[in-house]
Figure 1 (cartoon, rainbow, N blue to C red):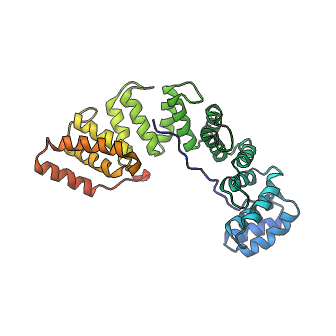
Figure 2: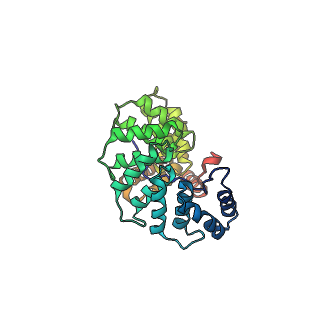
Figure 3: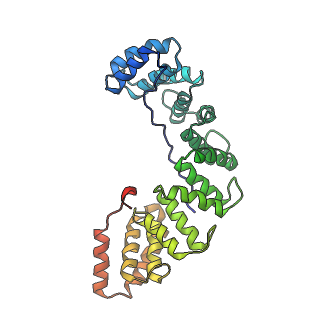
Length: 312
C-alpha cells in the first residue's frame, strides 16, 4: 500500500482584505493587486504598526516574498509573530512554516508544530493536513498515528484531497485507526476521481485483491489504467500483467509488452526490484511474440505520451 503523501500543502496567500471601512487598507489592496507593491507597502506599514493583525500578516507576507521591500525573512517573522499572537490563523501558519524551514529563525520543528496547532484549530484544511503530516512523520511532535488520523480527518472532511488520500492509507494499513478496507476504499475513491494517481493505483489494488469491495478484475484494470496513463510505473506494471494473463482485460501480448516496457523506464533507481520484475515479465511476453508484434509494441511505447488529469 502506498504510504501517505509527504509534500507540504501551502496556503495560497493573497493580500488579505481588511474591514470595509478601512480606506487605507482598501487602497493598499488595490495597489497590491495591480502590482504596485511599493505603494501597498507604504499604505500597509502604518496600519501594521497600529496593531492591525491583517495588516501585520500582509506586511510579513511582503517581506517574506520581497514585494515592495527587500526580502527579509527576519522582518517577515517579526510581523507574522505580531499577527499570530493576536490569533490570525494565516499568520500562525506562516510563522510555523518559517520555523519548519528555518527562514528568519533557527529551524525548530517543535515550534512549527506549536503554531500549526493554533492555526489548525481555527479550521484551515491545509494547515490541518500539514499538522497531520507532522504527527505521521514525528516531526516536532512525537509520532502518533492516531493524532495524525484525527487531523487528516478534519482536513479530509473539508475536502483536502491529500488528507483524504493519507487517511485512506492509514485505514488500509491500520495505523492510528482500526484497519478498515471499506473506509480505505471510501477515501481513496474520493480523491481518485479528482485525479490522484496514487489513490487510483491503490483503488485498483483494492479491487484486484477484493479488499473493502467485491473482487473485480475489470474494475481493477480500469483504475490501474487511469494511473498508468499518467505515467505511474506500478500501475503500468500491474496493467501489463493483466494484459499478459488476460485477467480483467482481453489477453494481449502487444499491450502487455508496451505497458511493461514503459514501466521499466518509469521506476526510479531506488526501486530496482520493481523495475526488474517488470522487465522479467516483459521479456517472457516477448518470448511468445513474433518480431512484428515486438516491433509494434515498441512503436506504441515510443509514441506513448502521459495524459494529464484534465484529459483522462
